[in-house]
Length: 120
Image (cartoon, rainbow, N blue to C red):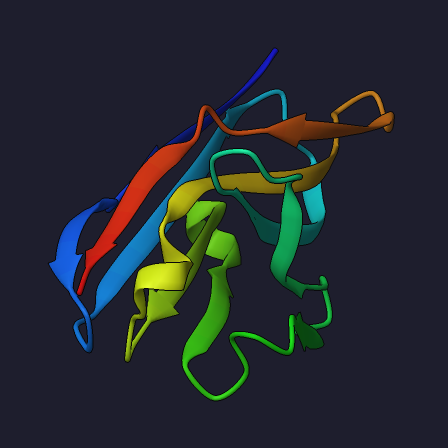
C-alpha cells in the first residue's frame, strides 16, 4: 500500500506565494516521475509540472517562470513553489507519482488534492 499526503494549500491574495508538498509513504522501492496537476471548477484536470527521477522538469506554459517543481528523494516528497499567483491559478491541486514497489511493480498514484484559492 502507498499513501500520498498533500499539504500547503490555502487562500492567498493575487501576487502572493504558496508552497505545496506531497509526501509518499508505504511500499516504495523508488519513485519515478512526480508531478502536480490541477482542476478548476467546470474544467478538466490539467498538467501543471512534472519532475523525472533524473530531475528533468516540465511546466505548463501558463505557469512557466512562476512555479517551480522540486523533489527530495530522501524524503519521498515533491514540492511545488508557486509565486506571483493569479486568480486563474485557483483550483484543486493533485500530486501524481509513479512508484516502483519493493516487488518492482510500477503503479501510478494520486494524492487527495489540496485547494488553492487566489483572491483578486
